[in-house]
Length: 330
Image (cartoon, rainbow, N blue to C red; front, side, top):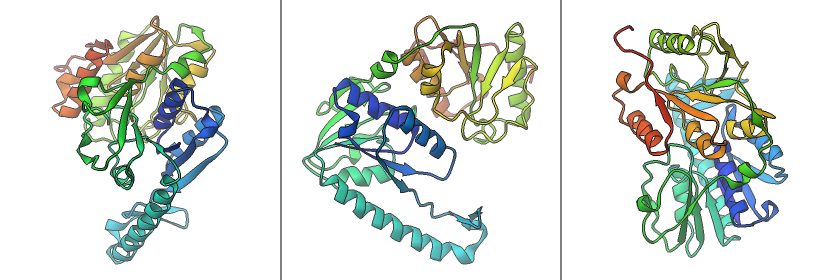
């Protein structure tokens, strides 16, 4: 069996599949698509935490960005470099594709970490008469289109997000209950409140003034508590935002994904807050029922359909949506 993944959550879901099927992890060849960001640290630490000693890295070549003398250069700003670098990246991708296809021929079962990732589409359709296991990669899997599956493969959807109704009838559907993480939990309920950060400013959906306002209201609502703020690994604007005095900001992103971080802590939080982070869905599945999982309602501030769909998923998953941020005061 081979598992092709590119994020910590995909790795966790692959391990969950193995646990649910009673497959030893040393029987799986893990292939990790490596990016040039903090995910690499989380991935390495996740492999170590899960006691996976053997895995292969394959670098993702970005044809629009290169690294030169330790600095990232955006090629759209350097037109003379863009064409030769882009050609080089395409050649590297073709070489990688051939290497991966050679690996796939050795295995009858293939775990695909992100069914929406276009390079994984190519991988899936490069083989036939194989067992394909499709995982989730957070809320990006909510609108999964299965039309790209063209070859004669047996397909299993192993999902915490999708439903049997959302999968083709020809697929085998298995629910991911995060049984492995539940089995290794060692924490007792504490009094702490944590807030899962998101790159709101980076996504350009809200202004700095709006984000400051959101946190001001949240700080007032929980004024009698200290809130530990855990930045997202892509959140670069932490120093720009004015957090309330009762917020304690974790320095930098945590070195393992939240799902492992909260499973590993000896004392669990009593409340987990966020805006519309997909981690609320996974933590709702993983953490004990006596821990409150709460989404801060921003629906009145957005028209983005994807975000509004996320809140609908929260309602379907019985995640509490807390409407405390009035719009007319901003």
